[in-house]
Image (cartoon, rainbow, N blue to C red; front, side, top):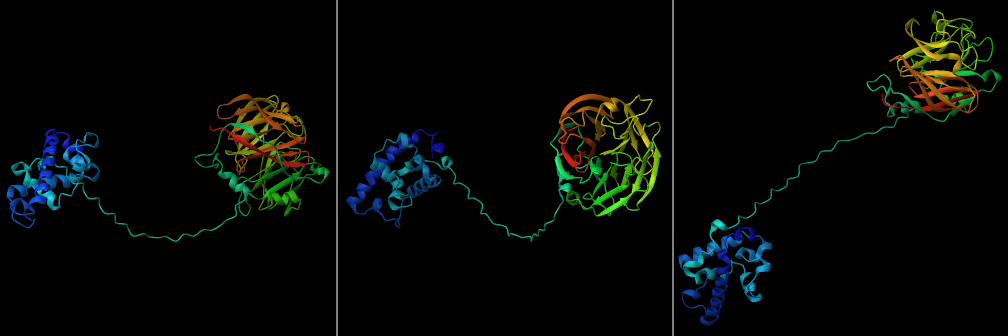
Length: 425
């Protein structure tokens, strides 16, 4: 082969001599007719040196691959000095009788290619043995999942897990209308879902309170938001005490609200249908002392986010600035309080996401903004300018639902939601 013979220059000269001897040998066979020692048949007696030379030549040729043909004799296709007839003769298989006699014609020079220069035959490829295949029976089943559950699977993750999905608010989408109040009592109101429901209630249950009136006691219960849109409640709860304004929330199986004409917060148990806890918020303004800019006795506003239950209010000590307190949802005990530098009457509404308070600039301007944020982790506030649409020009309620990852709002008879987007913390 070219790689094996390239280091033996004298092979080319011997190739020419070999071709000449081969030509003379064939001429003799045609003339003599096979008589004498040189014309003996393959089965006859031969000189041992001839046999050894032929064996070496055959061993060298046997180690050559098909593509190198002449290369086994030291000639590449570009360097071939032989005519077509000589090449024809040399390509005769070495196992045939004339080829075996070539070594004998050369006498003692038959060993022109030593076994040391022969290229070993390529190793045989291992045989592929397919392994027996095994099969496993698969089963599939289909389960209907409410949209509210699917929203938990977004890139923001699940609240309460290692990746809570918390971050800073960077975008609020266009409002989506879910239902509309059919009476004047529904010009202002509050509608809610429980982000952490307690059986027999689920996240599909929807709750609504129409807050126009002096004795607001009716809490409407719906099995799902679609039932709310049709306007047919599954049940109507009559609260033991009337509530004030639109600051109520549903959380962990209870309705948290401000009883009318008080600076207190109460918990109404949805299963037991009774008030299980009530606590006064020290110094909190009420019944029009420190409301949002739209009025409506919105002095005390409750909120829920990924971290728990909050109350938003102001005091005389804070001079009308927003004060935040974290509440225990069972006892309503105040765990911690933050005083901000955001004037409560100067904003239309507020909500919390991941421990940060956000405020809305206007309740009636169609192109309002989320204009301030207060981070309870650092105790600092900053100005924002995130577009916020008041489609129906009278925003009376705005809360964040951490399970739905949406804002719930009441905008002049209309119950709407806003999608939001958070940056990674």
